Length: 134
Image 1 (tube, rainbow, N blue to C red):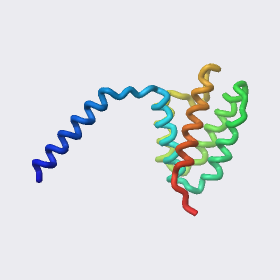
Image 2 (tube, rainbow, N blue to C red):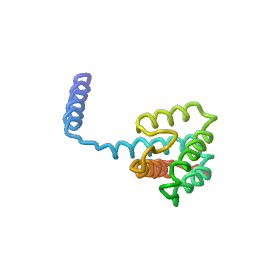
Image 3 (spheres, rainbow, N blue to C red):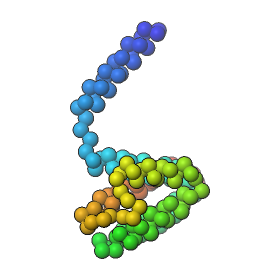
């Protein structure tokens, strides 16, 4: 039995090594994964925030590029305030911001606005997939 487990473990490690070497993950896919996972985690841990998160997201929907940096700064502050009672979730937001290479103050150039919008959409996609209790 131990030998079978060892063989299975070796096959899995070898398979993942081969697949891992040939997997090309682009930056946008990685950003989507990080942002959607964060959204899912917050929505799962704080089911009471579902309505607040939807209102939060709706503030970004029809914002012009000129107004986006200010709206983003305010929205980021609101997100932090929503989870302020949970040091774990606050830390996860900080980790995601670092992984995504974004700033709490928003995009610095007009070219970055689309990336920030993409991250916000991915965040909400993850939040909407979280299980809800009724």
